[in-house]
Length: 220
Image (cartoon, rainbow, N blue to C red; front, side):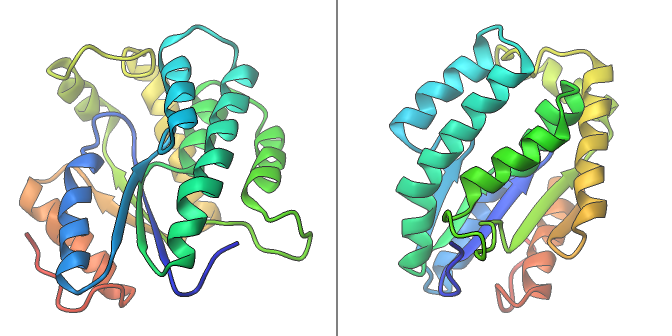
């Protein structure tokens, strides 16, 4: 499903890591180099997926129901937004993708990783067994100590059911992200998010330049 003319970049990290702050700057950098950019998020990105997002973030449910809703939203998102944008040669910048499901539902909620891998295969392939899964060409992971993230969330908006979880939950989620990083290090750019905004921005732009996605990318 992945189209070589497009570019798919995901942004990951625990709540409070600050990833969303940098997506707009990355979009502007690509647009300055003449690329068309699609900004999107998960769960969400389509009317159906946004409806499912509200259920996942706010309604009580078990981990299986949560995972099924997340992957249902992802399937609609891929079909209606991500795959068409990549086919058009656009840069897709996605605030979270499947790594978040393995971190939050898998590690954080303790759900069966094997089931998540099966859902990943079903949802992110074209149905042809020989086809590769749709995955980002680059995942920018904002790695932040959960204690720092928790302090940032104290001053955030009214928290959803994940943001209001105790510190131990975020420590487990952070471990889930670390496990995904170890599994596919070539796909990840690990960013130390416990720095100044300027320093984090410089590291993000350097990661994009290292992949030759952006040429002469500014630090901020």
